[in-house]
Length: 332
Image (spheres, rainbow, N blue to C red):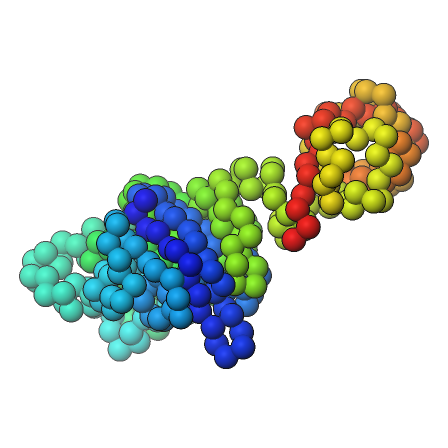
């Protein structure tokens, strides 16, 4: 592993912002730290950057213990949500700042800045003052400045949170493409699930300073481990085992305290389970059904497209629920 965290702890008074975190990052991988505000994501990132000192735990970079190293010694690139650009410097001087600090020769600085301006789409903006740039342009400058010294690891703390929705949509796609092209290791902090699932290959979900689950983005949504993670990711069909009629449930789920029913695996107009249609709504091409299943005594939310529903949607229909549609959840 390129980066390895073991037993990291950071407290502020009685508040444990980072609570015994262990995490690993592979070379060239982008990992998202995803969670609600105040869960410890940014604190964990600052510990990795060296901007904060932990109360316990170790940080390893390529098998070297860097726990006691300063941010400058670690050589990681940082991009903050407020950009942290120098208002008295123009675009070129902002991007070249770290190169000047590291003593790069002038000709190499010019070449590197030219490469980065082209990379982030700001060629022609060299002499502009950063205060005259849009939010999206400022974020591109901040990214180019972080990348300029060719850092070992790129750390991004809510980099798109200050931008409007339309701009975020475009920039997150660009970021995904850029990070893939650069093959640089990166940790991306966000509370926005869409950003995490778009930009990162793996996602670590945080709650109250702890890592609740780490998984590849597709696996995380399809197989959340706990009730809390499932709720956080927006799953609706969540049931306590005690509220279900269990006669129809697969026997291997008999001890699970909670269950998730993955509605995308339910097939309409097939199978032997009766469903009553309680509500049918449509948003654009997406159809939403609320179904009551008397065999289980539960209400199920289902979403799909016109091709997935019967031509005549009556008050009752048959559905097929494969065993794979049920997922046991931990009580956490």
